[in-house]
Length: 280
Image 1 (cartoon, helix red, strand yellow):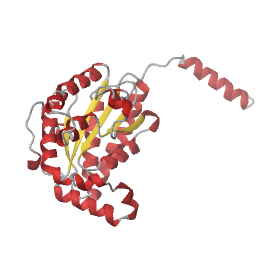
Image 2 (spheres, helix red, strand yellow):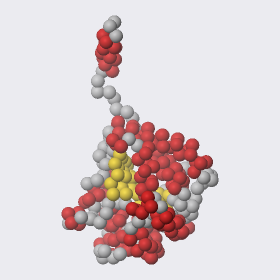
Image 3 (tube, rainbow, N blue to C red):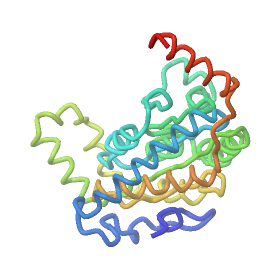
Image 4 (cartoon, one colour):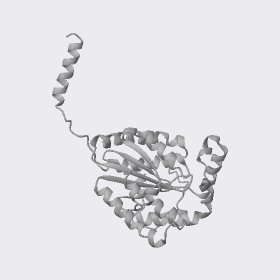
């Protein structure tokens, strides 16, 4: 299955989230049946991230968006587990600080994009400024409606400068969200995840749906595509995202850099040391 094309939102295409099966799991019936394929994809991701780090010419920005309990933290754990932390970091975004609010809305995000050779995961992202801002009328429509084009221009500038961008909308349905809320209540180790917003945002489900659909239609581009990932099954979410990351990184045709030293000379010096220390 070509996960990249299956879940990619084509530019300017209309997305109806209610028509997308959040419980889709392809041919696999369970996490167990998908384990071998997932492990293969994780190992490939590890190798490709190492290659990006070594090459040092390009970077990868992964943006995660979704409703409360959609699985952003779980996705981060899955991706980070596959990658060397030397070349990968996570950046979360909460309510803007006074300093951040005094700048344009993209300022705080631009500061956090990855440098060459690095992978950065945005836990929520610059898209909050056309989502929660829109749903709760935090700024006028005349302001947030211009941000789609501003975001596209921002992402185009990043890609022109070597940052590869992948954006994942983690798609769960209303019943699954309630199940995950219940799991947080029932499990004391998950109580720390519970927030008032989990429940105060629930009545705005339909408004968020419209905001997400507009985001996906207006801001999925050839250079920075959105993917709608069926996420009711966490294991399938992880498998699909791994495939897409690997497909994207393989398309970059990355290469290890040429050595900065004479390898034959270094090899000779190595053998000299070994012989001397062995008394030869």
